[in-house]
Image 1 (cartoon, rainbow, N blue to C red):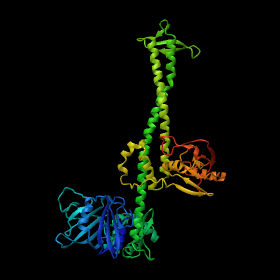
Image 2 (tube, one colour):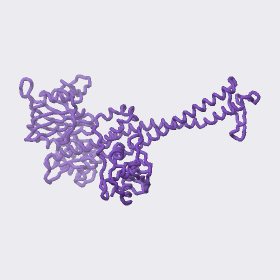
Image 3 (tube, helix red, strand yellow):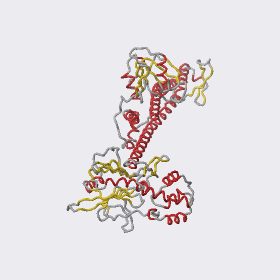
Image 4 (cartoon, rainbow, N blue to C red):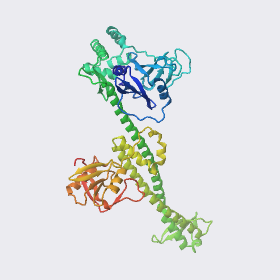
Length: 568
Protein backbone atom coordinates (compact mmCIF):
# COMPACT_ATOMS: atom_id res chain seq x y z
CA UNK A 1 0.00 0.00 0.00
CA UNK A 2 1.36 3.43 -0.94
CA UNK A 3 -1.58 5.79 -0.34
CA UNK A 4 -1.39 5.81 3.46
CA UNK A 5 -2.20 8.48 6.03
CA UNK A 6 1.21 10.10 5.62
CA UNK A 7 0.68 10.58 1.88
CA UNK A 8 -2.90 11.74 2.41
CA UNK A 9 -1.78 14.36 4.94
CA UNK A 10 0.67 15.77 2.39
CA UNK A 11 -1.98 15.75 -0.37
CA UNK A 12 -4.46 17.63 1.80
CA UNK A 13 -1.82 20.21 2.72
CA UNK A 14 -1.53 21.04 -1.00
CA UNK A 15 -5.31 20.93 -1.46
CA UNK A 16 -5.77 23.86 0.90
CA UNK A 17 -5.32 26.05 -2.19
CA UNK A 18 -8.99 25.17 -2.80
CA UNK A 19 -10.13 26.91 0.38
CA UNK A 20 -12.82 29.50 -0.48
CA UNK A 21 -13.07 27.91 -3.93
CA UNK A 22 -16.47 27.60 -5.59
CA UNK A 23 -17.87 24.32 -6.96
CA UNK A 24 -18.79 24.82 -10.61
CA UNK A 25 -19.41 21.28 -11.87
CA UNK A 26 -19.57 17.71 -10.58
CA UNK A 27 -19.08 14.55 -12.67
CA UNK A 28 -19.22 10.81 -12.04
CA UNK A 29 -17.15 9.18 -14.83
CA UNK A 30 -17.42 5.70 -13.29
CA UNK A 31 -19.04 3.87 -10.41
CA UNK A 32 -16.13 4.64 -8.07
CA UNK A 33 -15.06 8.05 -9.29
CA UNK A 34 -16.29 11.60 -8.62
CA UNK A 35 -14.68 14.73 -10.09
CA UNK A 36 -15.28 18.26 -8.79
CA UNK A 37 -14.53 21.32 -10.92
CA UNK A 38 -13.56 24.08 -8.47
CA UNK A 39 -12.77 27.73 -9.20
CA UNK A 40 -10.25 29.08 -6.68
CA UNK A 41 -7.80 32.00 -6.73
CA UNK A 42 -8.38 32.79 -10.37
CA UNK A 43 -7.91 29.23 -11.67
CA UNK A 44 -10.10 26.18 -12.22
CA UNK A 45 -8.99 22.92 -10.61
CA UNK A 46 -10.29 19.37 -11.11
CA UNK A 47 -10.43 17.40 -7.87
CA UNK A 48 -10.40 13.66 -8.57
CA UNK A 49 -11.84 11.38 -5.88
CA UNK A 50 -11.46 7.65 -6.55
CA UNK A 51 -12.79 5.03 -4.15
CA UNK A 52 -11.99 1.89 -6.14
CA UNK A 53 -10.55 -0.97 -4.10
CA UNK A 54 -7.04 -0.89 -5.58
CA UNK A 55 -6.59 2.75 -6.65
CA UNK A 56 -8.34 4.72 -3.89
CA UNK A 57 -7.08 8.31 -3.61
CA UNK A 58 -7.89 12.01 -3.74
CA UNK A 59 -5.82 14.43 -5.80
CA UNK A 60 -5.92 17.21 -8.35
CA UNK A 61 -5.96 15.93 -11.92
CA UNK A 62 -5.16 17.22 -15.40
CA UNK A 63 -6.31 14.07 -17.23
CA UNK A 64 -9.70 14.17 -18.91
CA UNK A 65 -12.22 11.40 -18.37
CA UNK A 66 -15.30 10.60 -20.40
CA UNK A 67 -18.65 11.04 -18.67
CA UNK A 68 -21.94 9.17 -19.09
CA UNK A 69 -24.73 10.95 -20.96
CA UNK A 70 -27.03 10.55 -17.95
CA UNK A 71 -25.57 11.38 -14.55
CA UNK A 72 -25.99 8.65 -11.88
CA UNK A 73 -28.21 9.30 -8.87
CA UNK A 74 -25.44 10.13 -6.40
CA UNK A 75 -23.90 12.58 -8.83
CA UNK A 76 -27.28 14.30 -9.24
CA UNK A 77 -27.61 14.55 -5.44
CA UNK A 78 -24.15 16.11 -5.12
CA UNK A 79 -25.05 18.62 -7.84
CA UNK A 80 -28.25 19.49 -6.03
CA UNK A 81 -26.56 20.17 -2.71
CA UNK A 82 -23.04 21.34 -3.62
CA UNK A 83 -23.10 23.20 -6.98
CA UNK A 84 -22.30 26.83 -6.17
CA UNK A 85 -21.08 25.96 -2.66
CA UNK A 86 -17.79 27.33 -1.32
CA UNK A 87 -15.16 25.28 0.46
CA UNK A 88 -14.64 26.34 4.08
CA UNK A 89 -11.87 23.90 4.89
CA UNK A 90 -10.28 20.59 3.97
CA UNK A 91 -8.82 18.46 6.75
CA UNK A 92 -8.10 14.92 7.90
CA UNK A 93 -8.84 13.00 11.07
CA UNK A 94 -5.28 12.60 12.36
CA UNK A 95 -3.50 10.11 10.11
CA UNK A 96 -6.66 8.17 9.33
CA UNK A 97 -7.30 7.87 5.60
CA UNK A 98 -10.41 10.03 5.87
CA UNK A 99 -10.76 13.48 4.29
CA UNK A 100 -13.41 16.00 5.30
CA UNK A 101 -14.36 18.80 2.90
CA UNK A 102 -16.60 21.35 4.58
CA UNK A 103 -18.81 23.42 2.27
CA UNK A 104 -20.69 26.65 2.92
CA UNK A 105 -24.09 26.30 1.23
CA UNK A 106 -27.60 27.76 1.23
CA UNK A 107 -30.72 25.73 1.94
CA UNK A 108 -34.18 26.10 0.38
CA UNK A 109 -34.94 29.02 2.70
CA UNK A 110 -31.75 30.75 1.56
CA UNK A 111 -30.20 30.26 4.99
CA UNK A 112 -26.46 29.72 5.14
CA UNK A 113 -25.64 26.19 6.31
CA UNK A 114 -22.71 23.77 6.29
CA UNK A 115 -22.54 20.46 4.48
CA UNK A 116 -19.60 18.07 4.71
CA UNK A 117 -18.28 15.60 2.17
CA UNK A 118 -16.50 12.67 3.81
CA UNK A 119 -14.05 10.67 1.69
CA UNK A 120 -13.11 7.39 3.34
CA UNK A 121 -10.09 5.80 1.63
CA UNK A 122 -9.99 2.30 3.08
CA UNK A 123 -9.44 -0.23 0.31
CA UNK A 124 -12.56 -2.10 -0.69
CA UNK A 125 -14.50 -0.21 2.01
CA UNK A 126 -13.69 3.20 0.47
CA UNK A 127 -16.68 5.51 0.18
CA UNK A 128 -17.91 9.07 -0.42
CA UNK A 129 -20.55 10.30 2.02
CA UNK A 130 -22.43 13.61 2.11
CA UNK A 131 -23.49 14.94 5.55
CA UNK A 132 -25.82 17.76 6.50
CA UNK A 133 -25.06 20.41 9.11
CA UNK A 134 -26.17 18.03 11.89
CA UNK A 135 -23.75 15.29 10.83
CA UNK A 136 -26.61 13.20 9.40
CA UNK A 137 -26.03 11.25 6.19
CA UNK A 138 -27.82 12.72 3.16
CA UNK A 139 -26.56 9.90 0.94
CA UNK A 140 -23.46 7.89 0.04
CA UNK A 141 -21.89 6.50 -3.10
CA UNK A 142 -21.96 3.06 -1.47
CA UNK A 143 -24.75 2.39 0.99
CA UNK A 144 -24.28 -0.07 3.82
CA UNK A 145 -27.03 -1.21 6.18
CA UNK A 146 -26.58 -3.72 9.01
CA UNK A 147 -30.39 -3.84 9.45
CA UNK A 148 -29.85 -3.01 13.12
CA UNK A 149 -30.99 0.34 14.51
CA UNK A 150 -28.43 0.98 17.19
CA UNK A 151 -26.49 4.09 18.07
CA UNK A 152 -23.26 2.08 18.11
CA UNK A 153 -23.85 0.38 14.79
CA UNK A 154 -22.19 2.00 11.75
CA UNK A 155 -24.85 2.20 9.04
CA UNK A 156 -24.10 4.16 5.87
CA UNK A 157 -27.68 4.98 4.88
CA UNK A 158 -29.61 8.24 4.37
CA UNK A 159 -30.91 9.88 7.56
CA UNK A 160 -28.54 7.90 9.81
CA UNK A 161 -26.05 9.62 12.08
CA UNK A 162 -22.53 9.45 10.67
CA UNK A 163 -20.13 7.47 12.83
CA UNK A 164 -16.37 7.38 12.25
CA UNK A 165 -14.84 3.96 11.51
CA UNK A 166 -13.34 2.38 14.61
CA UNK A 167 -9.64 1.51 14.87
CA UNK A 168 -7.47 -0.19 17.45
CA UNK A 169 -4.32 1.54 16.22
CA UNK A 170 -2.77 4.53 17.96
CA UNK A 171 -2.34 8.03 16.57
CA UNK A 172 1.36 8.88 16.54
CA UNK A 173 0.58 12.61 16.26
CA UNK A 174 -0.76 12.60 19.83
CA UNK A 175 2.28 10.84 21.34
CA UNK A 176 5.46 12.27 22.81
CA UNK A 177 8.72 10.60 21.87
CA UNK A 178 8.87 8.93 25.30
CA UNK A 179 5.37 7.47 24.99
CA UNK A 180 6.15 6.38 21.43
CA UNK A 181 9.24 4.51 22.64
CA UNK A 182 7.33 2.82 25.48
CA UNK A 183 4.55 1.62 23.15
CA UNK A 184 7.02 0.30 20.56
CA UNK A 185 9.07 -1.60 23.16
CA UNK A 186 5.92 -3.19 24.56
CA UNK A 187 5.22 -4.87 21.20
CA UNK A 188 6.82 -8.23 20.52
CA UNK A 189 7.73 -7.31 16.92
CA UNK A 190 11.34 -7.26 15.74
CA UNK A 191 11.25 -5.31 12.46
CA UNK A 192 10.52 -1.60 12.27
CA UNK A 193 8.31 -1.67 9.16
CA UNK A 194 5.98 -4.29 10.64
CA UNK A 195 6.06 -2.74 14.12
CA UNK A 196 5.02 0.77 13.10
CA UNK A 197 2.53 -0.24 10.40
CA UNK A 198 0.67 -2.61 12.72
CA UNK A 199 0.72 -0.28 15.75
CA UNK A 200 0.08 3.22 14.42
CA UNK A 201 -2.65 4.64 12.20
CA UNK A 202 -1.81 5.84 8.69
CA UNK A 203 1.74 4.49 8.51
CA UNK A 204 2.38 1.81 5.89
CA UNK A 205 5.23 -0.68 5.65
CA UNK A 206 6.28 0.90 2.36
CA UNK A 207 6.61 4.34 3.96
CA UNK A 208 8.77 2.95 6.78
CA UNK A 209 10.96 1.09 4.26
CA UNK A 210 11.46 4.32 2.29
CA UNK A 211 12.26 6.17 5.53
CA UNK A 212 14.84 3.53 6.49
CA UNK A 213 16.49 3.89 3.07
CA UNK A 214 16.46 7.68 3.35
CA UNK A 215 17.94 7.61 6.87
CA UNK A 216 20.33 4.75 5.97
CA UNK A 217 19.42 2.72 9.03
CA UNK A 218 18.58 -0.98 9.44
CA UNK A 219 15.12 -2.50 9.86
CA UNK A 220 15.88 -3.76 13.38
CA UNK A 221 14.16 -2.35 16.47
CA UNK A 222 16.53 -0.31 18.65
CA UNK A 223 16.30 2.89 20.69
CA UNK A 224 18.45 4.82 18.22
CA UNK A 225 16.45 3.65 15.18
CA UNK A 226 13.12 4.38 16.85
CA UNK A 227 14.19 7.89 17.81
CA UNK A 228 15.39 8.63 14.28
CA UNK A 229 12.15 7.32 12.79
CA UNK A 230 10.02 9.35 15.19
CA UNK A 231 11.90 12.55 14.30
CA UNK A 232 11.70 11.74 10.58
CA UNK A 233 7.92 11.18 10.70
CA UNK A 234 7.32 14.50 12.48
CA UNK A 235 9.66 16.30 10.10
CA UNK A 236 7.57 14.95 7.21
CA UNK A 237 4.34 16.06 8.90
CA UNK A 238 5.59 19.59 9.59
CA UNK A 239 7.74 20.22 6.51
CA UNK A 240 6.68 22.23 3.49
CA UNK A 241 9.35 20.53 1.37
CA UNK A 242 7.76 17.10 1.05
CA UNK A 243 7.75 15.48 -2.40
CA UNK A 244 6.39 12.24 -3.83
CA UNK A 245 8.77 9.96 -5.74
CA UNK A 246 8.72 6.51 -7.24
CA UNK A 247 9.87 3.82 -4.85
CA UNK A 248 9.98 0.02 -5.35
CA UNK A 249 7.54 0.00 -8.29
CA UNK A 250 5.25 2.17 -6.18
CA UNK A 251 5.80 5.54 -4.54
CA UNK A 252 6.44 7.21 -1.20
CA UNK A 253 7.03 10.70 0.22
CA UNK A 254 10.40 12.19 1.08
CA UNK A 255 11.82 15.48 2.32
CA UNK A 256 13.47 17.49 -0.43
CA UNK A 257 14.86 20.86 0.62
CA UNK A 258 15.20 22.03 -2.97
CA UNK A 259 12.46 24.34 -4.22
CA UNK A 260 9.34 22.22 -4.60
CA UNK A 261 7.03 22.50 -7.59
CA UNK A 262 3.45 23.55 -6.80
CA UNK A 263 1.10 20.57 -6.31
CA UNK A 264 4.05 18.19 -6.88
CA UNK A 265 2.46 15.45 -4.76
CA UNK A 266 -1.01 15.84 -6.28
CA UNK A 267 0.20 15.81 -9.86
CA UNK A 268 2.70 13.01 -9.23
CA UNK A 269 -0.18 10.85 -7.95
CA UNK A 270 -2.33 11.96 -10.88
CA UNK A 271 0.28 10.80 -13.42
CA UNK A 272 1.15 7.65 -11.46
CA UNK A 273 -2.43 6.40 -11.25
CA UNK A 274 -3.26 7.49 -14.79
CA UNK A 275 -0.36 5.41 -16.14
CA UNK A 276 -1.36 2.54 -13.88
CA UNK A 277 -4.97 2.78 -15.07
CA UNK A 278 -3.86 2.82 -18.71
CA UNK A 279 -1.62 -0.20 -18.10
CA UNK A 280 -4.41 -2.10 -16.31
CA UNK A 281 -6.88 -1.13 -19.03
CA UNK A 282 -4.46 -2.33 -21.70
CA UNK A 283 -3.87 -5.67 -19.95
CA UNK A 284 -7.57 -6.27 -19.30
CA UNK A 285 -8.53 -5.36 -22.86
CA UNK A 286 -5.82 -7.59 -24.32
CA UNK A 287 -6.74 -10.48 -22.00
CA UNK A 288 -10.42 -10.16 -22.93
CA UNK A 289 -9.60 -10.30 -26.63
CA UNK A 290 -7.19 -13.17 -26.07
CA UNK A 291 -9.98 -15.03 -24.30
CA UNK A 292 -12.29 -14.45 -27.29
CA UNK A 293 -9.64 -15.67 -29.72
CA UNK A 294 -8.70 -18.71 -27.58
CA UNK A 295 -12.36 -19.71 -27.24
CA UNK A 296 -12.70 -19.56 -31.01
CA UNK A 297 -9.40 -21.40 -31.36
CA UNK A 298 -10.70 -24.22 -29.15
CA UNK A 299 -13.89 -24.37 -31.18
CA UNK A 300 -12.03 -24.60 -34.50
CA UNK A 301 -9.56 -27.14 -33.06
CA UNK A 302 -12.42 -29.41 -31.97
CA UNK A 303 -14.00 -28.95 -35.38
CA UNK A 304 -10.73 -29.96 -37.04
CA UNK A 305 -10.43 -33.03 -34.78
CA UNK A 306 -13.93 -34.07 -35.82
CA UNK A 307 -13.03 -33.56 -39.49
CA UNK A 308 -9.88 -35.67 -39.10
CA UNK A 309 -11.94 -38.44 -37.48
CA UNK A 310 -14.29 -38.41 -40.48
CA UNK A 311 -11.34 -38.53 -42.88
CA UNK A 312 -9.96 -41.49 -40.94
CA UNK A 313 -13.31 -43.25 -41.25
CA UNK A 314 -13.23 -42.71 -45.03
CA UNK A 315 -9.97 -44.61 -45.44
CA UNK A 316 -11.87 -47.89 -45.81
CA UNK A 317 -14.24 -46.67 -48.52
CA UNK A 318 -12.37 -48.45 -51.37
CA UNK A 319 -12.71 -51.70 -49.44
CA UNK A 320 -16.52 -51.40 -49.62
CA UNK A 321 -16.35 -50.73 -53.36
CA UNK A 322 -14.26 -53.89 -53.82
CA UNK A 323 -16.69 -55.91 -51.71
CA UNK A 324 -19.58 -54.77 -53.88
CA UNK A 325 -17.74 -55.54 -57.12
CA UNK A 326 -16.67 -58.99 -55.88
CA UNK A 327 -20.23 -59.82 -54.88
CA UNK A 328 -21.55 -58.76 -58.32
CA UNK A 329 -18.78 -60.71 -60.07
CA UNK A 330 -19.72 -63.86 -58.13
CA UNK A 331 -23.47 -63.32 -57.98
CA UNK A 332 -24.29 -66.64 -59.74
CA UNK A 333 -21.99 -68.79 -57.62
CA UNK A 334 -22.56 -67.28 -54.16
CA UNK A 335 -25.01 -70.02 -53.17
CA UNK A 336 -22.49 -72.73 -54.02
CA UNK A 337 -19.74 -71.10 -51.98
CA UNK A 338 -19.04 -71.57 -48.31
CA UNK A 339 -21.14 -69.07 -46.33
CA UNK A 340 -20.62 -69.25 -42.57
CA UNK A 341 -21.19 -66.72 -39.78
CA UNK A 342 -22.51 -64.22 -42.34
CA UNK A 343 -19.24 -64.22 -44.34
CA UNK A 344 -18.52 -65.42 -47.85
CA UNK A 345 -15.01 -66.20 -49.06
CA UNK A 346 -14.17 -64.86 -52.53
CA UNK A 347 -11.09 -64.54 -54.73
CA UNK A 348 -9.95 -60.90 -54.81
CA UNK A 349 -8.84 -60.28 -58.39
CA UNK A 350 -7.43 -56.90 -57.23
CA UNK A 351 -5.01 -58.79 -54.98
CA UNK A 352 -3.65 -61.76 -57.02
CA UNK A 353 -6.85 -63.74 -56.33
CA UNK A 354 -6.07 -64.00 -52.62
CA UNK A 355 -9.09 -65.10 -50.60
CA UNK A 356 -10.99 -62.33 -48.83
CA UNK A 357 -13.88 -62.74 -46.39
CA UNK A 358 -16.79 -60.48 -47.33
CA UNK A 359 -19.47 -59.86 -44.65
CA UNK A 360 -22.98 -60.47 -46.01
CA UNK A 361 -26.53 -60.32 -44.74
CA UNK A 362 -28.14 -63.68 -45.49
CA UNK A 363 -31.63 -62.18 -45.12
CA UNK A 364 -31.26 -60.23 -48.34
CA UNK A 365 -30.06 -61.11 -51.84
CA UNK A 366 -26.49 -60.92 -53.11
CA UNK A 367 -27.31 -57.95 -55.36
CA UNK A 368 -28.86 -56.15 -52.40
CA UNK A 369 -25.69 -56.79 -50.35
CA UNK A 370 -23.59 -55.42 -53.20
CA UNK A 371 -25.86 -52.37 -53.54
CA UNK A 372 -25.49 -51.75 -49.81
CA UNK A 373 -21.69 -51.69 -50.16
CA UNK A 374 -21.85 -49.38 -53.18
CA UNK A 375 -24.09 -46.94 -51.27
CA UNK A 376 -21.69 -46.97 -48.33
CA UNK A 377 -18.76 -46.35 -50.68
CA UNK A 378 -20.50 -43.44 -52.41
CA UNK A 379 -21.53 -41.92 -49.08
CA UNK A 380 -17.96 -42.03 -47.76
CA UNK A 381 -16.61 -40.72 -51.07
CA UNK A 382 -18.95 -37.71 -50.94
CA UNK A 383 -18.16 -37.20 -47.27
CA UNK A 384 -14.43 -37.20 -48.01
CA UNK A 385 -14.84 -34.53 -50.68
CA UNK A 386 -16.79 -32.30 -48.29
CA UNK A 387 -14.56 -32.78 -45.24
CA UNK A 388 -11.40 -32.17 -47.28
CA UNK A 389 -12.81 -28.75 -48.19
CA UNK A 390 -13.82 -28.22 -44.57
CA UNK A 391 -10.33 -29.16 -43.43
CA UNK A 392 -8.70 -26.60 -45.71
CA UNK A 393 -11.09 -23.93 -44.42
CA UNK A 394 -10.45 -24.89 -40.80
CA UNK A 395 -6.69 -24.81 -41.30
CA UNK A 396 -6.98 -21.34 -42.85
CA UNK A 397 -9.05 -20.23 -39.86
CA UNK A 398 -6.45 -21.61 -37.45
CA UNK A 399 -3.74 -19.81 -39.38
CA UNK A 400 -5.75 -16.57 -39.16
CA UNK A 401 -6.25 -17.01 -35.40
CA UNK A 402 -2.52 -17.53 -35.06
CA UNK A 403 -1.92 -14.20 -36.81
CA UNK A 404 -4.29 -12.46 -34.37
CA UNK A 405 -2.47 -13.94 -31.37
CA UNK A 406 0.79 -12.70 -32.87
CA UNK A 407 -0.71 -9.21 -33.23
CA UNK A 408 -1.92 -9.21 -29.62
CA UNK A 409 1.49 -10.33 -28.37
CA UNK A 410 3.09 -7.40 -30.19
CA UNK A 411 0.49 -4.73 -29.40
CA UNK A 412 1.91 -1.93 -27.27
CA UNK A 413 -1.06 0.37 -26.64
CA UNK A 414 -4.84 0.46 -26.40
CA UNK A 415 -5.21 1.85 -29.93
CA UNK A 416 -3.45 -1.24 -31.34
CA UNK A 417 -5.70 -3.53 -29.29
CA UNK A 418 -8.75 -1.57 -30.39
CA UNK A 419 -7.90 -2.08 -34.06
CA UNK A 420 -7.72 -5.82 -33.47
CA UNK A 421 -11.07 -5.68 -31.65
CA UNK A 422 -12.65 -3.80 -34.56
CA UNK A 423 -11.26 -6.41 -36.94
CA UNK A 424 -12.64 -9.43 -35.10
CA UNK A 425 -15.97 -7.76 -34.26
CA UNK A 426 -16.66 -7.60 -38.01
CA UNK A 427 -15.72 -11.26 -38.54
CA UNK A 428 -18.51 -13.82 -38.41
CA UNK A 429 -16.01 -16.31 -37.00
CA UNK A 430 -16.21 -14.55 -33.61
CA UNK A 431 -19.92 -13.72 -33.42
CA UNK A 432 -20.80 -15.94 -30.45
CA UNK A 433 -17.69 -15.14 -28.41
CA UNK A 434 -17.90 -11.41 -29.07
CA UNK A 435 -21.47 -11.38 -27.71
CA UNK A 436 -20.41 -13.33 -24.62
CA UNK A 437 -17.53 -10.95 -23.88
CA UNK A 438 -19.25 -7.71 -24.88
CA UNK A 439 -19.80 -6.66 -21.27
CA UNK A 440 -16.13 -7.24 -20.45
CA UNK A 441 -15.19 -4.48 -22.87
CA UNK A 442 -17.99 -2.03 -22.16
CA UNK A 443 -15.70 0.35 -20.24
CA UNK A 444 -13.00 0.32 -22.91
CA UNK A 445 -12.78 3.57 -24.82
CA UNK A 446 -13.56 2.62 -28.39
CA UNK A 447 -11.89 4.48 -31.22
CA UNK A 448 -12.27 4.03 -34.95
CA UNK A 449 -9.66 1.76 -36.48
CA UNK A 450 -7.18 3.80 -38.46
CA UNK A 451 -5.95 2.02 -41.55
CA UNK A 452 -3.56 4.92 -42.06
CA UNK A 453 -1.79 4.19 -38.79
CA UNK A 454 0.74 1.90 -40.45
CA UNK A 455 4.50 2.37 -40.14
CA UNK A 456 6.26 4.50 -42.74
CA UNK A 457 10.06 4.47 -43.11
CA UNK A 458 12.67 5.93 -45.45
CA UNK A 459 15.23 3.48 -46.82
CA UNK A 460 17.94 4.16 -49.39
CA UNK A 461 15.81 6.86 -50.98
CA UNK A 462 12.69 4.67 -51.08
CA UNK A 463 9.56 4.63 -48.90
CA UNK A 464 8.91 1.43 -46.94
CA UNK A 465 5.47 0.67 -45.45
CA UNK A 466 4.91 -1.85 -42.65
CA UNK A 467 1.47 -3.08 -41.52
CA UNK A 468 0.78 -3.44 -37.80
CA UNK A 469 -2.20 -5.78 -38.07
CA UNK A 470 -4.21 -7.82 -40.59
CA UNK A 471 -6.43 -4.95 -41.67
CA UNK A 472 -3.46 -2.69 -42.27
CA UNK A 473 -1.70 -5.53 -44.14
CA UNK A 474 -4.69 -5.83 -46.48
CA UNK A 475 -4.91 -2.07 -46.88
CA UNK A 476 -1.22 -1.67 -47.73
CA UNK A 477 -1.04 -4.65 -50.09
CA UNK A 478 -4.36 -4.33 -51.91
CA UNK A 479 -5.01 -0.56 -51.80
CA UNK A 480 -1.75 1.35 -51.41
CA UNK A 481 0.91 -0.73 -53.17
CA UNK A 482 1.34 -0.40 -56.94
CA UNK A 483 1.85 -3.41 -59.20
CA UNK A 484 5.58 -2.75 -59.53
CA UNK A 485 6.21 -2.24 -55.81
CA UNK A 486 7.99 -5.05 -53.95
CA UNK A 487 6.08 -7.09 -51.38
CA UNK A 488 7.81 -8.93 -48.48
CA UNK A 489 6.57 -11.50 -45.95
CA UNK A 490 8.18 -14.17 -43.80
CA UNK A 491 7.83 -17.63 -45.36
CA UNK A 492 5.14 -19.69 -43.55
CA UNK A 493 5.48 -17.47 -40.46
CA UNK A 494 2.98 -14.91 -39.12
CA UNK A 495 4.15 -11.34 -39.62
CA UNK A 496 3.63 -7.94 -41.19
CA UNK A 497 3.31 -7.19 -44.87
CA UNK A 498 6.22 -4.94 -45.92
CA UNK A 499 5.93 -2.82 -49.07
CA UNK A 500 8.93 -1.29 -50.84
CA UNK A 501 7.64 1.58 -53.01
CA UNK A 502 9.81 1.55 -56.11
CA UNK A 503 7.93 3.72 -58.62
CA UNK A 504 9.02 1.30 -61.34
CA UNK A 505 12.71 1.29 -60.32
CA UNK A 506 14.67 -1.89 -59.66
CA UNK A 507 16.16 -1.64 -56.15
CA UNK A 508 19.62 -2.90 -55.30
CA UNK A 509 19.95 -6.26 -53.60
CA UNK A 510 21.23 -4.47 -50.52
CA UNK A 511 17.89 -2.67 -50.24
CA UNK A 512 16.00 -5.93 -50.79
CA UNK A 513 17.94 -7.53 -47.91
CA UNK A 514 17.18 -4.59 -45.61
CA UNK A 515 13.45 -4.87 -46.34
CA UNK A 516 13.61 -8.62 -45.74
CA UNK A 517 15.25 -7.96 -42.37
CA UNK A 518 12.39 -5.60 -41.52
CA UNK A 519 9.81 -8.25 -42.48
CA UNK A 520 11.62 -10.78 -40.29
CA UNK A 521 11.80 -8.31 -37.38
CA UNK A 522 8.09 -7.55 -37.54
CA UNK A 523 7.12 -11.22 -37.48
CA UNK A 524 6.77 -14.10 -35.07
CA UNK A 525 10.38 -15.02 -35.88
CA UNK A 526 11.67 -11.73 -34.45
CA UNK A 527 13.99 -13.46 -32.00
CA UNK A 528 15.11 -16.20 -34.40
CA UNK A 529 18.05 -16.26 -36.79
CA UNK A 530 18.39 -17.09 -40.48
CA UNK A 531 14.70 -16.36 -41.12
CA UNK A 532 13.34 -17.15 -44.63
CA UNK A 533 11.56 -14.17 -46.21
CA UNK A 534 9.65 -14.31 -49.50
CA UNK A 535 9.51 -11.29 -51.79
CA UNK A 536 7.85 -10.64 -55.12
CA UNK A 537 6.23 -7.84 -57.09
CA UNK A 538 2.88 -6.76 -55.73
CA UNK A 539 1.16 -7.67 -59.03
CA UNK A 540 1.80 -11.33 -58.20
CA UNK A 541 0.03 -11.02 -54.83
CA UNK A 542 -3.69 -11.87 -54.82
CA UNK A 543 -6.37 -11.98 -52.15
CA UNK A 544 -8.94 -14.76 -52.64
CA UNK A 545 -12.58 -13.74 -52.38
CA UNK A 546 -13.97 -14.27 -48.92
CA UNK A 547 -10.57 -14.94 -47.33
CA UNK A 548 -9.73 -13.82 -43.81
CA UNK A 549 -8.07 -10.41 -43.23
CA UNK A 550 -4.34 -10.52 -43.93
CA UNK A 551 -4.52 -13.71 -46.02
CA UNK A 552 -3.04 -13.55 -49.53
CA UNK A 553 -1.57 -15.93 -52.10
CA UNK A 554 1.43 -15.08 -54.24
CA UNK A 555 3.62 -16.42 -57.05
CA UNK A 556 6.94 -15.69 -58.75
CA UNK A 557 8.52 -15.21 -55.34
CA UNK A 558 12.16 -15.42 -54.35
CA UNK A 559 13.38 -16.32 -50.87
CA UNK A 560 16.24 -14.84 -48.85
CA UNK A 561 17.40 -15.91 -45.39
CA UNK A 562 18.18 -12.94 -43.11
CA UNK A 563 18.76 -11.92 -39.51
CA UNK A 564 15.79 -9.90 -38.16
CA UNK A 565 16.62 -6.23 -37.68
CA UNK A 566 14.77 -2.91 -37.40
CA UNK A 567 17.95 -0.91 -37.96
CA UNK A 568 17.94 0.18 -41.57
